[in-house]
Image (cartoon, rainbow over all chains, first blue to last red):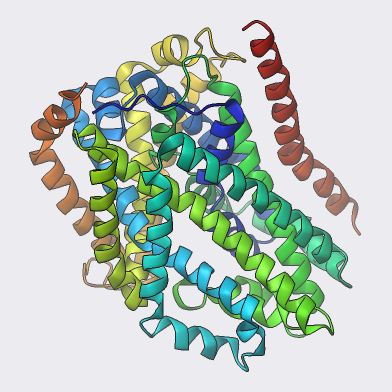
Length: 488
Length: 38
């Protein structure tokens, strides 16, 4: 069943798509990765890969979604050929699996926002104990349910009344909150030291290949490019909506928020930390939660002499994090829902199925951080494969033909040059192979039993889970094509 | 503060925030023209 709903304005589309791109990765992961990779040294390759990875993939997703008007399965079938529908389905599975545990993360953010408002968070004697007490109980499951219910209701209300309307509020409020926090953070005593560290490049890091690979990974994970999400929202673009200019705006907008969040966190940590700031900021902690859920609450409690003011800033920070997480979760729920709509279901039936699946399959991650870590690793790395499949589809169609016929249409506000063809044809496949190889081979350095699929983070668990999924989808290819394209 | 820090503080936000503001203004301008021409 095809829906006839479209975004009502350019700004509605841009804010909704920014909602996809801006997630917890901008606020939470970005600062940690910057700290682990030599501060300002990391920012140089990070900006470079905005041009070589994020923007070309965002352009591609917008163009495929708008031209085919299908979710990933139909879109890849139409672009690359029906025999490649399984690739589209793999993109759906990866983003759906991420949705299952991302709902848990959104729940954590909501819980910490409530705790900050009630004052519990800043009165906790030990933030690590507070986190462990919360994360090892049943509470994360209830917050996971809350998050999925909120996202489900938004998606159920459709594009205009749900996704567009809610993202306008979430993304605008998020920007405003970040600006307030930015002003507070840079005016803290000693904040300049953090800003200096954040921007100063060091030669030994700039020329380190690992820093470049981490920068590429950050672009792959935090812009939402290559996930199939932008492709899904592009289905609802009006015929005369532009692709290239909107794509550039999303790419730069996403990285602008990361930069803003980085300055906030580095200023705060350097201003308030009485121990080694860099050790704290780069610590991963359980399930990479160290900085956000353990260390930052401690810093907020020391921000000023006023408990109310400290609680206010902590609440604003976790509200921003909750908004960022929720806007991304909505897009993840919409992608899976759209796949069921393409199969012929109504939006109402589709969202009920997606909601139930999300609660059931997200619960293990909510109750067990090892399962959470495993899923985060397997499907996080899987996103690089998804990006590769999208680039493959365009190459199969003909990258130059795609640029001329699908991207540079009459509705384009700016025209994309041949650089796009070069990046999609040569650089993108190279980046995918290098990144995948590096991550999978690197896992052998932290796990000698790299082949063991029962371990949380190694090559074995990735390859086994991917192979199982790809095997099933490959077998179901014909069914997926018929089910999706017959409902035209 | 070293010269390299100052240069980096100008160039990185210059590209990222500057790019965002540039494309935002361009979008506003293009949208106005589209609305004007119907």
